[in-house]
Length: 113
Length: 107
Image 1: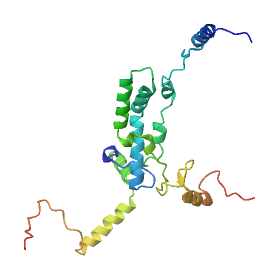
Image 2: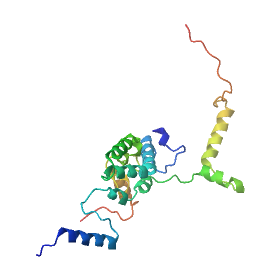
Image 3: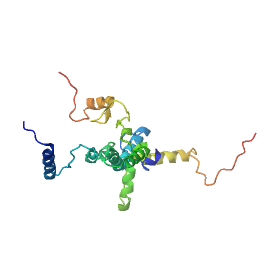
Image 4: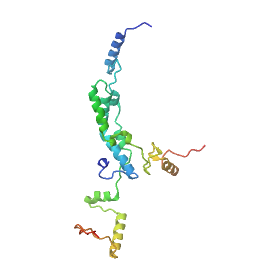
């Protein structure tokens, strides 16, 4: 959603709408995380009255979907791809292979025995 | 094993909790404290993509107050190209200041 998007482009990697979207989702989640955790705490706390907990549940489900951590997806920094990402290198498998063969990733070399 | 009454065990537990400053919760009631113990993941998640580095244009803007000159080859090329195009009369038209006159499309 455009309301979560930064007014000025603040990404230094490969840019397409999917990476911009994912970035704004990440920022929205970081901003609303304390609120979400507080609601989650109220919901899990069985010593609180049932009505409060039900209200917290409703409030949590009413929050914007961009503030959910499950919306966040790892994306390739070099191509913006969303599948086949090596999380340690933040790269898709093909880009990782190319970079590794070129020797751009320290400590990675092709296995051979 | 000698049977120890439950009350005594609970007392022991209470004292243990006092000493080690933990919550005394003999019935195992869910208080949701595990949510409070979790660390916030937001800052690390938000740092996934690298921030935008400085470009020549931003550097130019930064250095302007100190009267430092920057060489912006791309911008120079663009200005050169524009000058060439304009000299041949092929440049883009000037932006209109007034709203275009309404054209009736009725047939």
